[in-house]
Length: 344
Image (cartoon, rainbow, N blue to C red; front, side, top):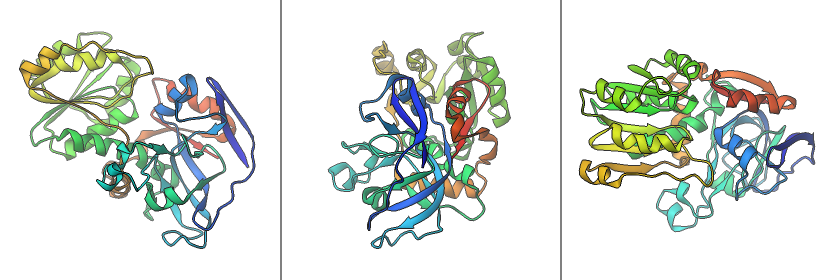
């Protein structure tokens, strides 16, 4: 089969690799769509301790079951399935507690397990039994279903942060994830959503998602503007949906007393952030993180997309064949597009 094989930092090559074979406990999926995530880009440029080259990346996927092992009961040949990233081991104390995204083994598609920038992806016994693999609702196409994975991550972050009725929410970063938070924040009860974005072209592209205010942080001080938008009190909830250390520090100054800050965006390895913890102390802030999602979030995301909440189509801006994987990554790194989908 054809696959985009990650060979090391800034090295990826589309080549022929052996077809994966399903055993009695696994399923083989013909990949129809796989979106490019920011973490794929970080791995490509900086590597990751869980990814040992050569490896196939890609974890926001959807496709059709081409073969199912004799012991598999949940899926059959011909089923349309969406596939997420984080795979609980199913046996450790974290998985038993229902928080498998905190599993210390930390399995994930496109990391330890070969991903979906390929014509086929093999889902082993652990993925089939414990992972985020779900049937696609009949009214969704493969591209839409693939975006259940990033939406699931949004649902996890919003759940952890606890948006309340009437809250003002700030989202720092207007990429696809940041823009997905906008409708979910409103659905969760937010009265006002404010988007902060450094790139004006990216900010202008994000206006279609109808936040209450947009702030271009390269042209004006975002902290002052957030305080202005909130009557000097600050925001109830802040999400840092970007890879910028500066935004983590700024979030403290934007927050209302007893506000909640979610450090959503992962930072490049080796990054450091200086925080004035007195602000956390005296404002009684709650600072949390959000890493990936649980299989139940993936199912919820599919149900929400199926119901049109949100309409996921505007979040897809580009489509590329597998042979143009490098162009797909370049488009995903740009400031004009949203989610980029690779079509093996």
